[in-house]
Length: 410
Image (cartoon, rainbow, N blue to C red; front, top):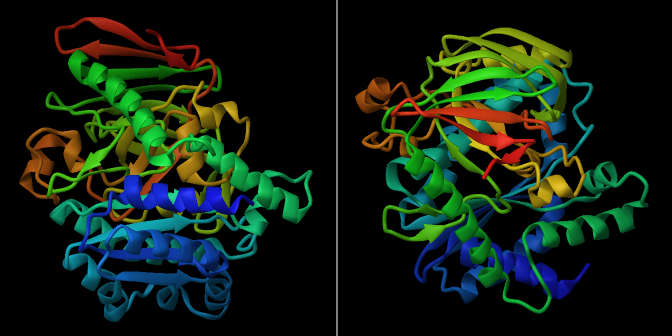
């Protein structure tokens, strides 16, 4: 599918996603099935002046064999050298690109305790990068790359070859790529629109959000008095602007971990640890999950919520219009990076330091004072719908309508 378009996508990830500067190291994580595209990214990185480009290949099918043949403790174990192999290059003026791919159905028969252990392992390795993000402000980006199995699930009416071709074309559309325009320029223009919406939310000085829809969501989320909304782009400690997620449609922040009350009903399945959690809802009291319901993989969801002390609290609340390009596609991607940008979403687990003015990069007393959540996980799930209503209370007591019929009210 479109050799030139794939090269443009690689260019977009390097030049706008990472905004790579000459002399920087790049660590790329990608599944072995997408080796050919990874080499396009490597080429673009060196063209941008990279010092070293290191590709860490993962193999989901090899991981499946490991899970089938190891104990829970062996599955979750992460060796020191594994962490070091990622961290060494990031310490030396590095940046990180995760090319994510979904493999629906491969782990359907895995026991929930092993699936949870595998997710813990994935999180531990991801936390190496997250530490560099938060404590050293590195440039990073997560972006999807289609594979054959995933494409066939998203486009079941097509044969495998045509499904993969269609997925790539869809991805180009979702990242606002045109054959005739510079992909970096068009993406940056899209980012500008998101930043404008972010600035509007920050100007309102919001203290509380209330979400309601016909699925049964009725949830109140409190915000810190020094709350800051993010979206559109991130900035490194060296004042380099980059796009942490491609594609992205969200404006987001972290809630006060103790001020979340009510029920939220998921509007899309959650793909995690190689499995799908479907038709689920969570009930919160004083910020904590007190009830879990799910028609499929309830035990896995319960295990994730019980990962550590903070995994039963929220770390993110994000606003996404129902009219977003990903939502308009009408597709379910079974991948959080894509699906979260089709609907408003929440995340269980760790919050963002940038969500509260004055909070330091890594969890400490400033996080405690701001009621920012700390956890080893950060798992997004979607609840936005076409009829979602959001009302908000401002610092001066004014009540404003943020969302009406799934989109910004004004």
